[in-house]
Length: 257
Length: 257
DNA sequence: CGCCCATTTGACAGCTTTCAAATCGCGTGG
DNA sequence: CCACGCGATTTGAAAGCTGTCAAATGGGCG
Image (tube, rainbow over all chains, first blue to last red; front, side, top):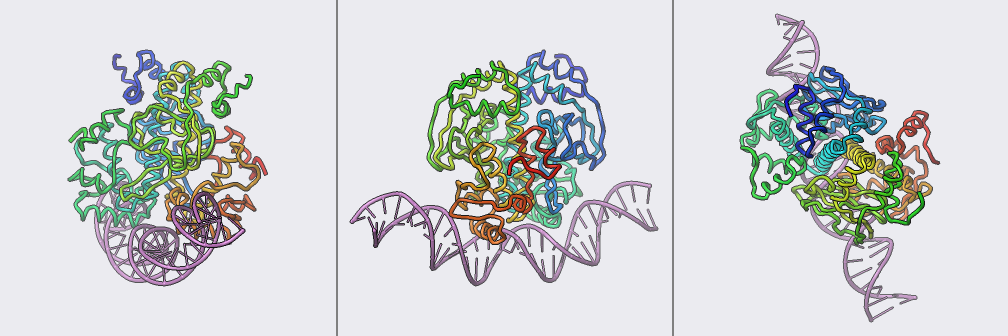
């Protein structure tokens, strides 16, 4: 398929990475009608309790999903990077059960839920790939349940850094083992179920142990294996490559670096 | 459609509750080849890291999904009741990222992943309903992330009891506001990210406050509104009825009782 | 240069965990 | 029908990880 320079191209690539898509499937995805829209940090892409009309593909920048509990505390549920569909659930479910907000300046392509539903019915392979996307999403949520439920602060934060690094690399947004964390320590705390004060102490402890190097919000990982050990991190749950990952991890190898 | 007495009938009902299914769709689901299998409490229906070959529909009894973290601690990720597909992810993903185990004696119908994939491709509406099921699954995981991440012990346990009660009622497995908790306090602890000792104290505190009555493992909720308040529980995330739920909750009403 | 938000630090409180030990419930066997 | 055995529940005391509260420091932007 020739390149179209459509902003939906990355979506086609992502969905196609998981499920074989015929040319007609790819064309159908690229033919989806959409509206581009930008958001500033903190802006609400979807607000909890809203009725769902659109689903969004993240074209640039970072976003996060969150819930607010009774006491006013906030829990971040996931971080999203370019190419992610940040609210696929809104293509099917009627009421938003959580908010989606901009972490940085970002741009999304908004696609109406009707268009997505029709696409899945007319092109079942696309439907399967969207289902796949949702299943991987669910797998990541499960890992987060275990992360906040059963790991101590140091392990939780290290795990989050590992996940973020692997996903950045997979999206081609980071080359080596250094990257910029696009969030405040308070947001890190909301990801891990900690307080910002304790996240601060934990980051410093990770630094003291030589597991990370920090400069403002940029993070460098001097020893990947040491960090994944500290973070109890096993990338299987990201389901990045359908079968190779596990075979490689059996040998104690990683794809890159 | 006439009744067939197929054990897959409840699955048809559940999927049909969410997405309109044509007669041909229903017939196709009922025509899925399956094997029945029973498990005793603790038995592994799926083991973490296994290759996926089957997905299972729970025909009777209760099951749970879990992960084990580095220190050997266990986190339960979800509880499943009759009619649930307990490992739908295995229809698409290749490697099991968590285990599924029997909570009680139970029976499942095992369906090969190939059969499910073919069904979604040949009957897109069924694929859409399976996708819907996965999206609701994801919504529940998100709520659990918030539950273990940002709520205190009392609220967490109360929330779990609320969720269990609502789902039992929805599945027709419980009439009033009394039900049997089919799990040990240690398993409750693994659901909530607490220790069994603290779950014990928390249950007693809930009892002391008059929020629940206990007799062995049976639980009675004398005042539903009081418990959902204590548990910061809002059933929207269960997406039980596509639009009515929110409208009702706006009025501060609940469907039954 | 000055303001504002984020980061950092210290002291202390508190919720939960840990570690044991006692009690209870229930299935099994005498 | 009662004794025994084992896992589950309960309880107490003490330790510990993380939270709370406040204040100081630092960095970026107008």
